[in-house]
Image (tube, rainbow, N blue to C red; front, side):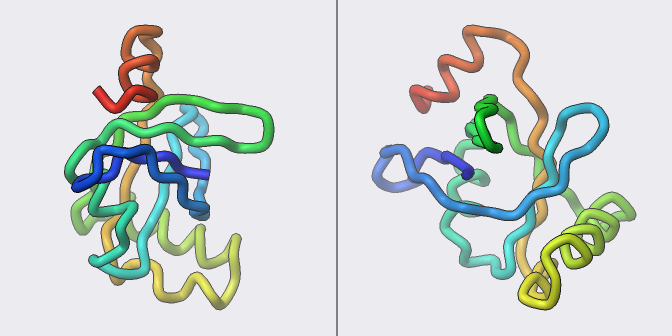
Length: 112
């Protein structure tokens, strides 16, 4: 589950998204469209939280440009999630970097 701050409302928005986890603890997420609200929210405010099972962590999103990391993330998600994921890559791809600082994690949750 990905939690973003609504770019218009400022409210917390929860959206289920597929992801790939990297060895360094970062996550890759990809939208199937440029109009995906959660992706537009991340562009407006890159702070977010992700819940994976019982684990909840704060992240800062960095949008990936057309490069090998972006292509690899899309390919891995299609392999992980199957055919419905084939629209991935038509929208933005983000690397979610863990926020280690406790104050930053609190601020991310508060939408600051």
